[in-house]
Length: 261
Ligand SMILES: NC(=O)c1ccc[n+]([C@@H]2O[C@H](COP(=O)([O-])OP(=O)(O)OC[C@H]3O[C@@H](n4cnc5c(N)ncnc54)[C@H](OP(=O)(O)O)[C@@H]3O)[C@@H](O)[C@H]2O)c1
Picture (cartoon, helix red, strand yellow):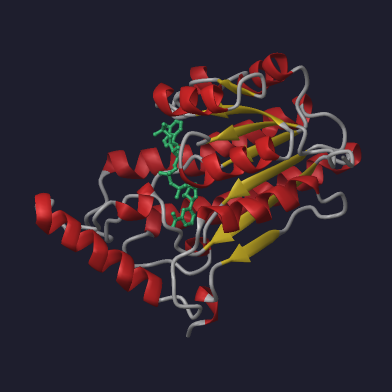
């Protein structure tokens, strides 16, 4: 087996219990890497550890808590015996149009989608091995907001700016920072019904119908005619994590979504 590119050997993956984070963790584990998965739902993290004994470790953490996330990379380095990479996949979205943006939704989305990854990225600069890599999952909504995505879009756009700053700061030790901007990918996040202000959440069969209609609508927005798959994003993340001469950039993986007028 050829040696793994630096950046992909020992990696901390936030949001590693579900969706794109889980797909990234599994891709790294399949390639023989060692991975620390983090998130709040311990059962999801333990399932990864159980499936990959000796290769995966669980580090439960609520990233909205500054005291819990502080030192997370150092804990991952200790658990894995070194740390080559950070993948930040944890994220939250709450669709609310201007005039209906709750203070709580504003604070939470900024904290998880911008403040936490910036803090983790800062810690990565001192904890990652020379030549290591970080990859942040941003979104096409960073560059093309919806009426309902002001906070999420602002946070993800800020994350792209922070990523470039981290890329410059890490360059002297060949530590690279990059991002991916997915279009709509079929995960739990997209299966939450998008409600109008004051609308009661549907239940039972109505909920099922609503979600299928939502997925069909979102899929059809993409010129390539469907939603993205988590594995398609994971492949790009793993590539960026180990790409030795790529830093400060974002890779759009969106089925052509941004090509639309
Ligand atoms: N799905 C899409 O269409 C899409 C498109 C573009 C970008 N993205 C971005 O892709 C990333 C992954 O999302 P996904 O689609 O894979 O959805 P997902 O399965 O819902 O993943 C989100 C992850 O974030 C973690 N998380 C949320 N709040 C957290 C907190 N306070 N502390 C620690 N972890 C927290 C969740 O774990 P716990 O609940 O266990 O804490 C979960 O594993 C996100 O950054 C999202 O913004 C998604």
